Length: 103
Image 1 (spheres, rainbow, N blue to C red):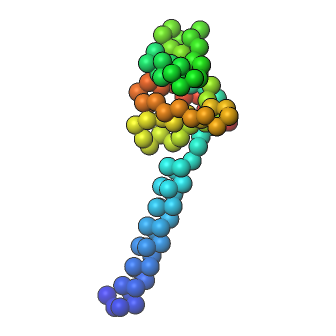
Image 2 (cartoon, rainbow, N blue to C red; image 1 turned 45 degrees about the vertical axis):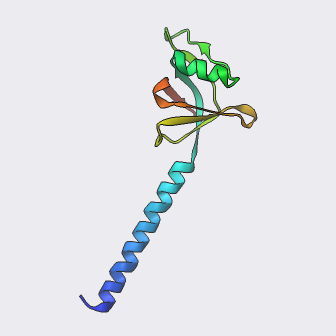
Image 3 (cartoon, rainbow, N blue to C red; image 1 turned 120 degrees about the vertical axis):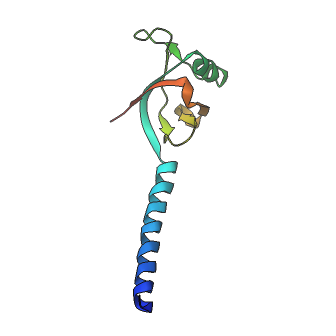
């Protein structure tokens, strides 16, 4: 391989790396609009401790329904839920039973 070919390969590899890094950073910082979620009893207890309400779900025995405005992406073991007024609550993803997204 000549010096020019190595230079072209290095530039192309750096470009692909930069694009993938940009996609990853965007995906980890994106907030996803949520219609509502169903949580288990421990999740409902954590929400109540944080001052947010979770009501018993009529259509799912043992589950509780909460209405956050948005949530973070599903890359982490914890879920950060954004409620009205800029209030956020973090709870383990294992406590979330079902996500219902808007749109």
